[in-house]
Length: 275
Image 1 (cartoon, rainbow, N blue to C red):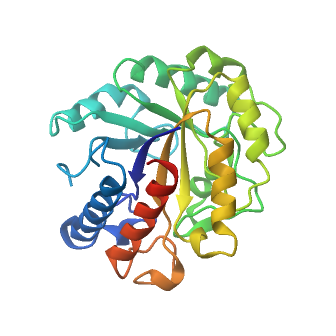
Image 2: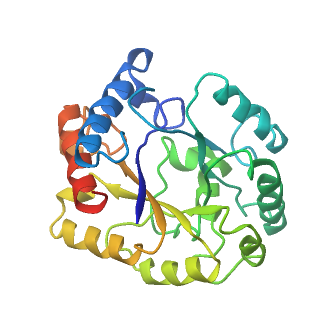
Image 3: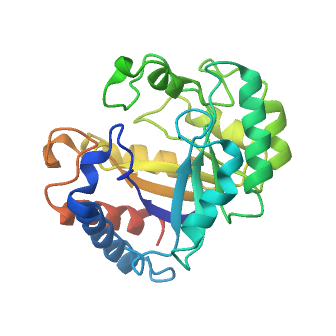
């Protein structure tokens, strides 16, 4: 079941999404408003910037990237909750095993202690490590040093599907804590992911449907397969990634040339899977 749809970018993240925001954030805000109106028209049970949306979502990675400590999570949530009456979800929180799996375990337990009961939804990223043969979306790639390589070590499971130390403990926090897991086009991990999510007791899942992938041959068949496999979870579907032909620059992190094109994709996906 699709629980929510999410219009995602990272307009304040200067690593690779800074172009999204535009002057004073107007470009990002315009895209979200157009997409939310289109999606809400397809599913009026939940009226999907702030009066156009139902929830504000935040990410935080203090053990890998952010310049604040994991212990500051409550303060960071308070900062957001002080400026909006909307619920605040933590849609992506993570710690890598780049340095040591023991740090991964600590990150899981400490983050759960600090966030459970303070945010209505928490999605931990991710179930699987990112395969080393796949690209990690960063602006400077390997020139970023360990910051780039940490992208490949976020999972509870290694690339080969074997569990890490934290996997044995994660079930203690489900179903209160969910998982964020992205699936690539025709992802070979889909069925294994569903089996592991059920094994771990996961109820809430965040994943994505790619606007860029929607232009591939047989895209709807893949989307149907993905969403059917995930039907047993309360799923937040994130609409993201711009086709190169539709961006202000030929990159999937670019804002669209026309927000109406992105809004049409969001409306079509909402109509197909959430109405």
